Length: 388
Image 1 (cartoon, rainbow, N blue to C red):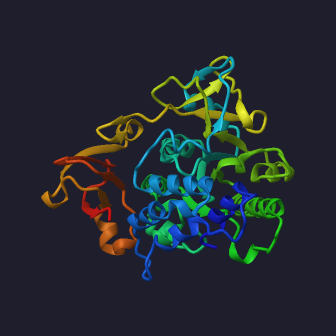
Image 2 (spheres, rainbow, N blue to C red; image 1 turned 90 degrees about the vertical axis):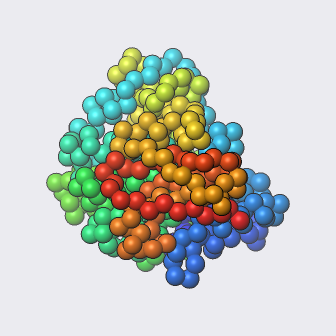
Image 3 (cartoon, helix red, strand yellow; image 1 turned 45 degrees about the vertical axis):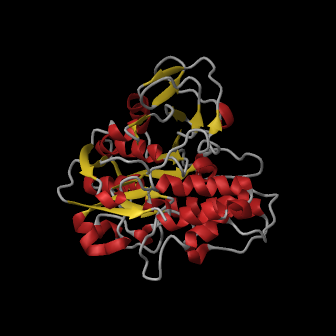
């Protein structure tokens, strides 16, 4: 169950690749934790780099981009391969919060998607929490949350066993922020007791999404007064069947539940802005473009990632973060190093099973680095690991 969604994505994306060929995701995942469940963010990347020639190019790039995102590495050229490409068209960019909230107040279920290798999408989702909570949204339903973590709401933070993508610091901070705000965090991914052995990839994909819909609707039924903020990957928000694939959004439509679907994985040349924006026809009414045109309700476009001091602008400009300068120990200067910043309390309770609040790679001769931590965090633990 732990790797079900991850491996399914790889198989669907590569229908012509022989099943016998080893998935780069499998080998990297095996090295992500040790026997005690401790996280190792360096080992998967080293494994992928050392064995690149062994894998299909498309599968390798997908895996490498994913594991790079865990350590704060961003490459607009290589890491945009899974984003949908839209056409500029006659669109006007508008404030995403104004447009989204005008629709969200009259809805009871929102589905927002992400590209799994783009932490900026999770940062945007986190900025919506305050407004959504004020509008009555009190449940955050995550595709990425593992059924194994039954204590996340009492613990108030995710750990290594909470999921796969949730091990990425921005995703973990998104969950922390939701729990601190008062959201109940649940999962809607297909569970181990719901799985079936299906050889056909389309049938397997459709079955998975149909059970995601069952689980999401069960949450709504159990909490009839609550509005639900659903967070998913890629095409799961699509409200209509496409190319024989039927997604979560379409199964909800079939159940007479019209979710407000928001796409943020479409790129557009119109995104000449410094922050996310919604595509509209007149500054207020949403329009959609690209492969998801007519399949979703709203599209949010993100500007290309720009760096400042090696850190992405979207992270530095986040109002809920504060920058702190940390000295690099002499023995690490001039070497490739992973800088990890933890909530000290979480680390003392969980050890290496804890998820950093910030982490990134440094490979030059910097004497100090700028770490970004939640402004509410009082005590941190900073550690350095050689990339070897």
